[in-house]
Image (tube, rainbow over all chains, first blue to last red; front, top):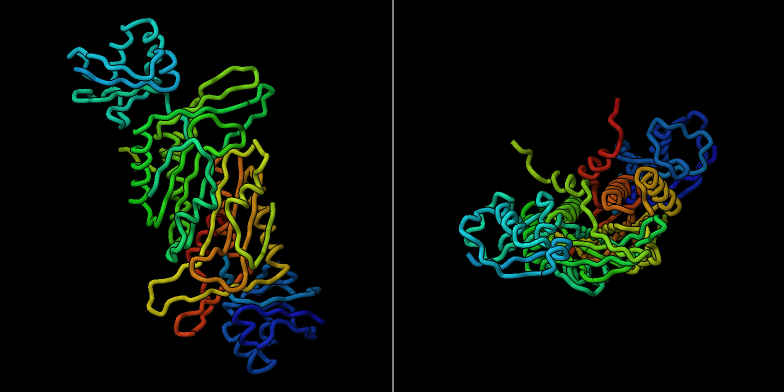
Length: 85
Length: 85
Length: 154
Length: 154
């Protein structure tokens, strides 16, 4: 499955990129599994996703839980807890 | 006792005056008694204070209760419940 | 910590700037503006005339503002209340509160409005299309709103 | 019912006028303005840089605003959020709510801020006098504030 990934704030700084397109293997079913899979892509990803429990995610621009399934997603974003306002 | 009386809103319209100085007999001890005494001063006062229970009072520019004593007051004001804001 | 009673209109942005310009300790500013509403009746409101008790108004608003200062960590506050003849859509009252965080600014602004509504000596008279004039009556909900700030009675 | 993300500053008075001009059904307007605070530390904050998730921000703010519209009888509302580099004292965010009565305007403005703080995809980075940069962390009290609007969990 091909999906667009977006990274914000310190997740972006650690991965070293704001966005990328990746081909995700069929074995990756959920947001949490996607984070685990990303950790294996290199030291910068291992570092960015080391504290996966504090990272939030959105699928197609809607907040989701780690257990949310990513099947059919066009865009998945990873970021720290928001601090606007 | 000589005291300045002020009337606002429909209390002013009914008494026909915004303020006056009156000599209050010593038998008049409280705000409620002052209203009762004023009622006897003429039909316009009887009309203005007919619904004495809805009229509010201030002594020297501080909200008071009907039972508040007026001894030493320089200024007593009568008005309907306030409707600012 | 300013209280004004005036016939002239006010500008919310200018009032807030006047209160917070050059400060870097303020993190939250809340404003409340009350305006003259028309109503849905055929005999519509054409104007609203506000009278007040000069001297007591300023004293009462200052007491109310002082009470808010004691209850919340306010960095600045302002109450402006208009008097005289106003038309539907016109501004009546402005309350501004500034604090480091939003909780205090919101709570203090609500408190100021609730107390102002039940304690500040202003009275409104409505004029309607048919020429009639009526003194506005107190809303029970305003008394209820003010009461929530009082300690439970024993 | 308007949401804007912009680098430019805003004027509270002008925004309120734009929302309520010519209307006579509005009786209460509440604004909340969030500003960049310096802090008391010797290593003071020199600037704050805000980034966001274009597309999701607008969608999320519109969802939050729609939820406020469902909960309270709002006649108008506006959210403006700045992005980019800001200095202490600068405006960050503006929320405006207009209703017939003050209770709805106050409650909706607080709700919008609480939800915006916990849901809108913005991130703040502080720059300090010594040249260090730090991503701002979430305040627990913001999560608590947002939670009070949710139905009790079963």
